[in-house]
Amino acid sequence: MLVLVIAEGVVVLLLALLVVGLLRSHAEILRALHDLGVNLEDGAPQGGTPTFGLGSRAAAQAGQSAAVGVDSGVAPAGSTPDQRVGESGLAIPLDGPLGSAHDLMGVTPAGDGAAVAVVGTGHFTLLAFLSTGCITCMDFWDAFATPTNRRVAGDSANLVVLTRGPDAESPSAVAELASPDVTTLMSSEAFDDYSVPVAPYFVLVDGPGARIVGEGAAASFDQLQGLMTKALADGGYGMNAQRSRRDILRGRQRGASADEALRAAGIAPGDPSLYQDPESSRGAN
Amino acid sequence: MTQAAAPRRLSAHGLSCVVYPGWDIRIERRTESTVPAPASNIPMGGYVHPVLHAATSTLPAARGDYGSGYVEKMRTNDVFVCLAEFDREAGDTEMFVNGQPLSVRSTDFHPDAQQRVIAGMCGTQRFFAAEGRAFCLYVVMGSWLHRQTLTPIANSLISTIRITPR
Image 1 (spheres, rainbow over the protein chains, first blue to last red):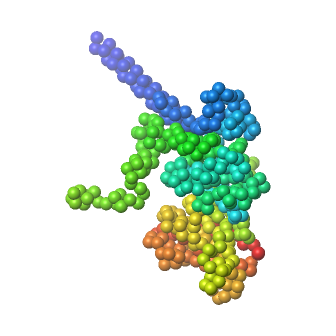
Image 2: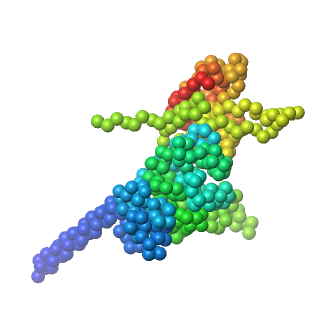
Image 3: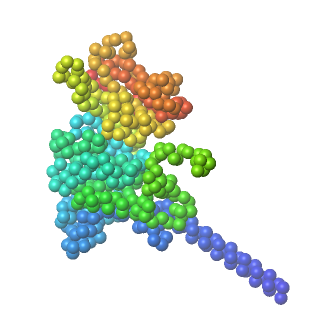
């Protein structure tokens, strides 16, 4: 009898070890998938596809198929630039994984040379691809003349306005529309690098992560504000962001969340209250 | 075997440099001063020379010739390189040595060598003439303590600056 109990105990122990091993292996697979950008946890945002493309979504909601006949807000991979323009005249992002981020190089409307780092910077960069000829773009040229509107992608995000190069756009026309306080670059190369079919088009780049967070078109500045909020939340950067359990446990984005919470409480970087000794202020009270 | 892509060069106004990842660079001619010279309608800066600004973090759109507007926001690991041109005649004076410097040394830097002294930071400047043009090379480092580790970063860009005659 004793031998039987011991044998059963050994079998149970072996089975427990097997289960632990399987669970550990499962966790490692999930972690590897997560590191590759696939998050299978409940409620996790779908990664890897363009996160905004409101122009085409609006057409889909109205029962009108876009030029390429899609109702998902994205154009099938491999679509040509002219196939990526919806009936509303706005550009549609390509389906599939978001492309790589690229640094920018071009000329300013004044004929100066400029190279702008986007990848590996310590902040987000919103790239606004505009034109001097499109009516829709005028709303954005006007909006970016106001300092508060330049922070549409967050207080710390950098805004860069891009037009096609002097071969396709008039530098004097760009100079007339561009705010002197906004970095404005004329670069056809940037339109190619980011596969921009037609202006207006917006790309949000996560500098530290060296990746594109979202891209797409908007018909007005108000729409752009909504798109930015969604892109940041989908990417796990906003207050309403969906965060996986792993993110919370590992403290990912803790710094960004803390900054955001402080900003919401009216405490800006460099605020004197951040440098006060809590003990002394407690004593004063 | 694949060949590495040639580094991109940014060129304008007879100045050029290699664009390395992470560097923000502008080569621009500053706008004319709106302040008239005393007793005349001619702007104070009647002829505006080019200036090259290169920084390891984002340059704001509005900056002074020697980086004011940016240097105050530099982090301790940031480097700012400025190449400002002077009148051609200035190159004939004793202050301007002949030949373009292609590097700086960590011992060249001092907190007092900044255009406007910012605590914890340091700078250096060299006046020189090259290709019939006169320049000031002004370099600022975000940390006086880290100047030895930041000097090679500054030199990686300074060594690629090319000046052509105008």
